[in-house]
Structure formats: C-alpha cells, structure tokens
Amino acid sequence: MHVSSKTLIFALTLSFTLIAGAALAQTPPVVGTIGITTDEIKLLAKGWSIKKDILGKDVYNDANEKVGVIEDIVVTPEKAMSYAIVSTGGFLGMAKHDVVVPVNQLKIKAARVTLPGATKESVKAMPEFKYAD
Image 1 (cartoon, rainbow, N blue to C red):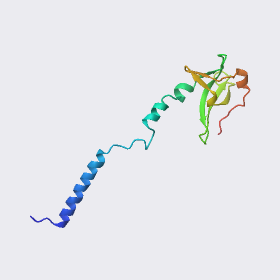
Image 2: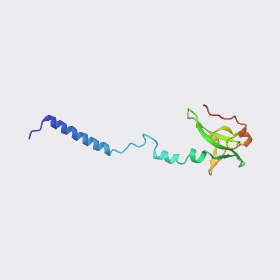
Image 3: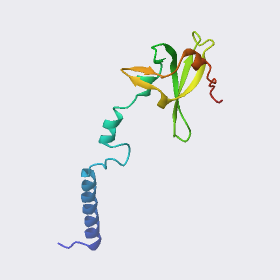
Image 4: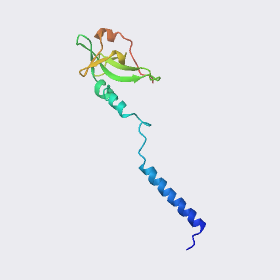
C-alpha cells in the first residue's frame, strides 16, 4: 500500500489538531485572572451591602433619634471616596433636604445605621445636595 505525502501530511495535521483540541478542552480555567479570588469573596461577604444594609435605612444619632434616611450612595469619579446621600425632613418627598455624608462617618451595628454626633438640626443645616444634570 502506497501512501502519498499529501495524504500523510493531511493525516498528521488532522491528528495533531484533534490531540491539541482534546488537550485544550481538558485544561481547567485559570482562576483569579477575571473577578476575584475565593479568599477575597470571603472577605467581601463580611462587608456592607449597599442594597441590603444601607439604602432606604433610617439614620439615627447617639441619642437614638432619627436624623434622616439614606437615599443613595455616590462614588467619586476617582473612586477614592464614597458618600451617602441622607434625606432629612419632608413628607412624601415634599420639602426634603438631601445632604452628603462621607460613608466612613456612618456606623452600622446590629443592622442600625448611626451618624455619631448628628442632630436633626445639624443635618438640616448642612448644605443641600443636588445631582448634576
């Protein structure tokens, strides 16, 4: 039986392709190149959840008086600092006064958000925050 060189080259190329394809299919994905590591996930799970722990929560002072409600969290364009938009006063959105509080000033303990040293008057006296158009 005579095998031409073209047939032999074709057969070798096909077999190398199949072997390489099978080898690549068995290679596990590289972990940690996209997303975060398992250790980072464990650490992250202990952090704040904006949706679950912060947004819409009442804000209290040291005297257990309600001073506002967290309406939003804003991250600066440089991503260096996060700020809470705290709404105070008003009813059904009428005459409400939104102010900015650095997130690191808020304390969360037992699912309660506290702004130490704040009073309703001091929060209302803060400059009003308005979103840029």
